[in-house]
Amino acid sequence: MSVDDLTGHVGEWLRGTGPMSDIVISSRIRLARNIVGYPFLSRASGDEKREIYRALADALASAGFGSNSFFVDIENISDVDRQILVERHLISRQHAEGEGSRGVSVSLNETHALMINEEDHLRMQVLKSGLQLETLWNDINIIDDRLASEIEFAFDERLGYLTACPTNVGTGLRVSVMLHLPALKITGEIEKVMRAAKDLKLAVRGLFGEGTDAIGDFYQVSNQVTLGVSEEEIIDMFSGQIIPQIVEYERAAREALSDQRSVQLDDKVWRAYGILENARAMASEETMFFLSHLRMGVSMGRFNQLDIGTINELFLQIQPAHLQKRNGGKLSGEQRSVARANYLRQRLGHNN
Amino acid sequence: MGILCQCCNQANATVHLTDIQAGGEPVERHYCEACAAQEGITMKPHEPINTMIEKFVKMVPAMRDAAQLTCPNCGISFGEFRAQGLLGCPEDYTEFGELLMPLIRRAHDDCDVHRGKRPGQTNDVGKLRVQIRSLERQLEDAIAEEAFEDAARLRDQLNTLRSSYDASKQNDASEDGA
Ligand SMILES: [Zn+2]
Ligand SMILES: [Zn+2]
Image (cartoon, rainbow over all chains, first blue to last red; front, side, top):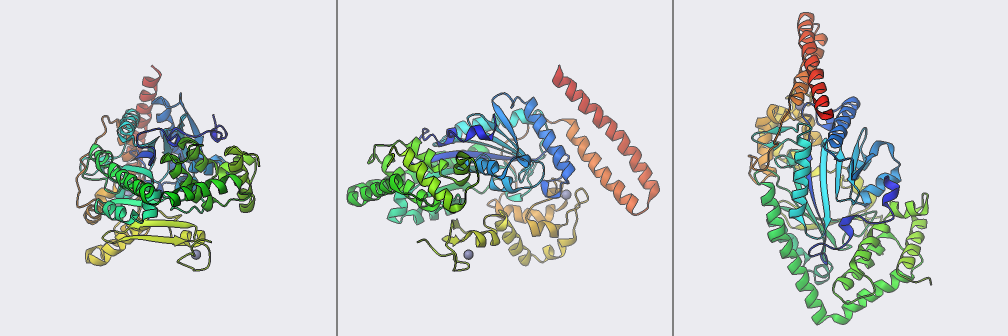
């Protein structure tokens, strides 16, 4: 199993199957850990990074993360392969662009990715499609326990898990939920949601790939406070209140659009489809923009020729590294636009 | 088509952010790739804490004088932490404790006590690593200061610790194999 084997399909988190998957693309939980006896990475020498890498890779192996996972030595793979992992949300951009010994252990279905030597010695993340935070917490809690019996993590009785950046200290836990909110964007109510999120000390940001209109209507909501609250409290807040509330707003906005502006709504959806299935060159931003409208049409039941899983997959496959991997070599920006349009035409079922 | 970069007003904006500022309104920001990198949006994820630290330092005079304070374990100074937003080692939380706590409270909604899970098990190998590291550092200092008697004593201590470190690693390994 290698990076090459990933690109033909999608990870579990993009399948569009979990609860509320019409609006919630994916849920993710990340835990930051550092091992005792070593400096944090900004002060670690090349040798120390190698030792940390080896210690954690050994711990992963003896904790049994070899059988249904594969390990990638990030330092020694190509730029395109690193980018593939970023586009699949298996490693962070920071991890891809880092220096020295670093790696990631990825489960075969891509539901967990354990990064070694990112900002902290170990950043474990689990991700699934739809709103599934309780399941994810259960999974990552077990992973954490299994590793903690192999290797000692830096922990302080008062401050909890010690992290390189004090903004992660305590639980080291970051919950991130990726939402597709096109109707709130169209009705202009997205601002209200942002304000409400701010009052709850949450970070909301648009997502972007290579020059993507973040506002491809994808928003990521995450907690910022990691100290003084338990993991379960953070997760309850997300799955019990915050996310259902935002989903409800989006559904109400969608209903209002169907009731009052149904022609304009269908026009947006069908125009998007018309362009995606016919264009000969598609830049990344405009593709995201039109795919977002098409996704809205599909999830609202106004467009039945495609399913959500397929659209989610298109969002991934049109990213630069995935295009280049399929092409088998590097492509200029212009060549990518052509390859992207060709791919879309082929996937949308026409050979015109 | 598209929006111009708000920074240079020339290139097309390709990086779009909607940030909720602490105590402020949601702000949409649009940058070209180059300006985004320069502004630290795409490359440096620690801008917010740096800004927070700088603001804080201006408010608390004691912190201005603390830049020289250095962690004996990893050698980072509080000034360096301020500049990069990242600590040098876990001991820094103790070494810079007084200076860090106000920052930590600020980042965590006035909280300063962990209420989440704790590691179930600990092992001695990790603790030995910490002691060895700290002795190695003292030894380097002693040699640099030409305090050779101290250096000799430290070297003896180090050798003892290293052999028990090797022994406990081997123990662990044989337990795994069993
Ligand atoms: Zn610019
Ligand atoms: Zn230190």
